[in-house]
Length: 312
Ligand SMILES: [Zn+2]
Image 1: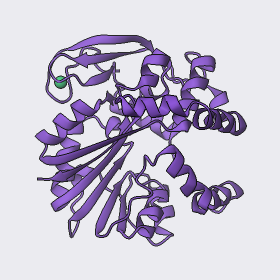
Image 2: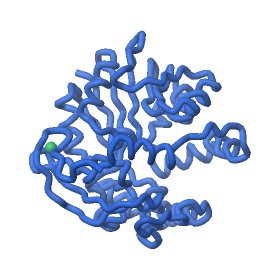
Image 3: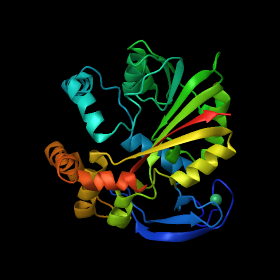
Image 4: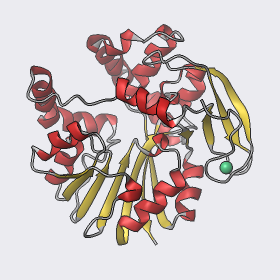
């Protein structure tokens, strides 16, 4: 574990505790965490942080794509994502991964995993490429005809620049968000866009679920942005014309509810993996509690920020 008093990753300011007793509500990774807020820029951050070795081990245990291909599960998932049902669901529930955005030009999906997003971007008109460190996941995407680079963002030198770079639920995982946006800026053509989605630290569900809000996601989420803090960071890293939308995905609401009832420190929350339970709660959220979701989005308290910004 790193220094629990380490300063702000963006501006070096001192941090104050805003929430104590936070723990991993998904996998049961041991440890207690605090959420601290920067006095200067307002960015909230997880403390203490895992060391890079500890984090690597945690990602390998819980996030590692094992190269699963053409199994019943992957075929069913693919059938679902290719069906009109998914497009209908995105229209009703909100599109937080830019799967319905149309356009042209070169697009880079950072952390593309096995390429699910790439298929949507290609279908919607883009020349889509990926950047993915997990070699097995990159191979799975290449098997579908995509160009996928396996390099760190800081070492990545493409032959030509991009018109769009996608950071879908990525920025909150990186130790240096400011450096990441500078690197993305360098990869873009003049006037190119960055598309970002991440949890909203100003979310209404955060206020309701407190330390069991699913999107604290410690130890993996290192920073917790509001729209205002992210606007400031985008402006200081060379972006303009920031457009922000808010969504509260039914899946995230269902996960927070399950964590609120079932999560215990040091134990995996198995109920999060019960498809029928999760699907039922999602339908309740979308079908009955939709006015709450609508109200959250209207008042800047949606659970997910969906932004785009243009390179100056
Ligand atoms: Zn700061």
